[in-house]
Amino acid sequence: MTLSVNVFTNQYLFELEPKEKEYIVSEVACKGFSVRIFPSSIKTFIYRNRTNNVSNKVAIARVGSISINDARYKMSY
Image (cartoon, rainbow, N blue to C red; front, side):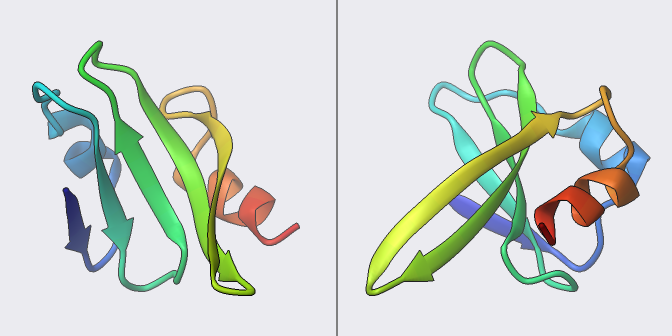
């Protein structure tokens, strides 16, 4: 399941609840920038892209260990 939100805020990320299966919430304002929420309550920033018709997901860092802006910056490299 994938959801989307215009722009991530700390409050929004804090309020994301774990579900029975992991799910992803994407940020519309920054293409490919998402957060993966695991049933264990772990939340990670990820970068998703598609190259040669193959979907890729790269973990950036856990939510809370770096700021949202730092995660966006790391995504660009």
